[in-house]
Image 1 (cartoon, rainbow, N blue to C red):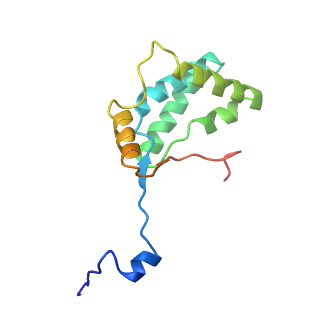
Image 2: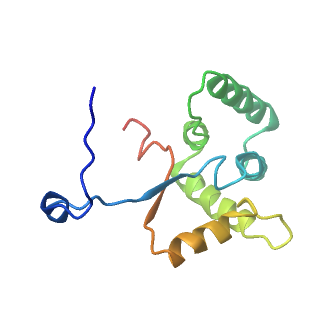
Length: 137
């Protein structure tokens, strides 16, 4: 197979410029997912999910992640808690993650890397996995 290289300044290239974007995976790339999950289970217990049920959810998490699939813990809470309690959980979780005395969940080099992308005017997008709404989407 022969591939021909075209100059970047070709008329075709000027009509249809190639746009570049950096896609950043959220979990285990930008953030310490294990630290986030510890906080998730801590807040779940605070809002009323008993330790036995949390242990079951953790077991399910390990099973799903062992297969290489993404685990979405909030769907398990939706099965256990009312919509009002889910909203309260979200507020508590955000507050927990904003607590001053906790270590940051971003990996150390992430702010510098994002600043570099901004300085270079390189567009980027953060991607992650999540079920929308009732989890059936």
